[in-house]
Image 1 (cartoon, rainbow, N blue to C red):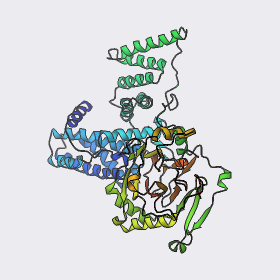
Image 2: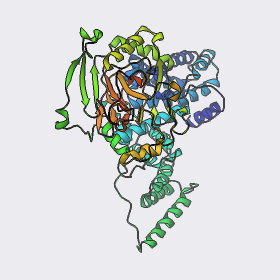
Image 3: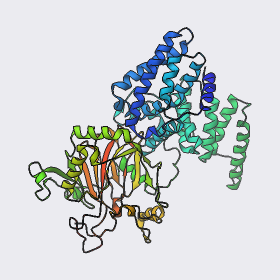
Image 4: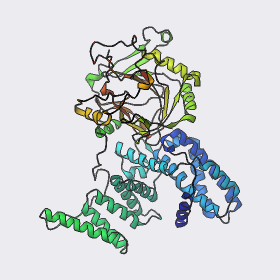
Length: 557
């Protein structure tokens, strides 16, 4: 059956059909797939009734999916809040449903095929499945979770019966392997092998797992273990096309290394199982990666008793603003320098739901500005979908804009439109600045080196707007997040956790107009939950009398 389905899948992929792609970047849009899958299951049930005697295998598969979709449609966002559910949804709709369609075509059923044809254009594609797999690996790294925890559905603060099979783990490993990401390939191939050795039934061949695993271990520089794994592969399949050659190559390479070290024999491979921490994760483009991820886990925070003693809460009426006199807003200090404040009860439940409703049909993959060309493009370090809303769209947007102006005391007529974002599987936005950096930042020191390397050729990103730089950021949290999803500031060790209905505000620029580089911040990957935010980027123009220029380059008050 598996060989036939594999053949059917290959045949199907040869056809040209449209997909929406990048569905995995928004939990909200993925909820539509839950209902789509449910409808397909119902259609499949009708087809099975018509030809039940010939389609017993399909009927069994449909019964399993029927139970799953009943669970998922009862609370779609809650179901997709678990990243393994989201990954398996991507995988099912990208691979298994397509395999099933090809099988059904051998005995055409007009109703089922018609239903598939209607919905197929909205199916996730290979990039979505790959993106969801990489999201699990990103969560694994950020929150230091081993592959077994994911496989058994054990995530911080949540336990579920959703499981990853041997085949799921194998496919995760292959995704990493095909990207030359041997670090994650080792972790997931090892987990696949562990579950297979424990007796889990699967059609994945042990030799295939050992083949990928041994080469990935070799790429991680562990020759003794690579030799041991390759010997196991040769013992299982002496005629394996690559195993014998790899074994001779690995042994020759190790002999050469021992000769250079004047050693006669090499130590036996470690008997400790491969797990998180066995090998060092390769460095990447982000210099503050370790600090950033530690903050996402709630570690390495810069808050202490002395700093906390300088933080206060108050009722804010913004110099007796008429709209705040009868109901002052609750304001809390989140950080003292640079000053970050949180406003409570900024958005009502009805307002957040209306904003989500307006944004959802317009959600598109969030973009970043290329530092060299100034052109907006997608990037792996920003995984979310966003939409831009203006006052003409709905009265609620006008109310929110007015509220932001009242709370901040800043002019919002020159601000950008309200941006609404929904984060997908492992959704994140790695450390970045909200303001545009000048191309003459020539003398960075300390962690400013990252600024110089990444942005030294950046054009004036906002010049065409004619409204100056982004002077401040107002960020609304429109959902609670069960785990992960904090807003962190690596430069000074702050972590701000989402609380529905609240908003945080900070200045990106000093009063002189110079950028405050301490405000480099990030949106941590969402571990469990669906994160909705909206933000208003307020620009310099119009603030001349509301926030006058200071006497020094770094005046803040």
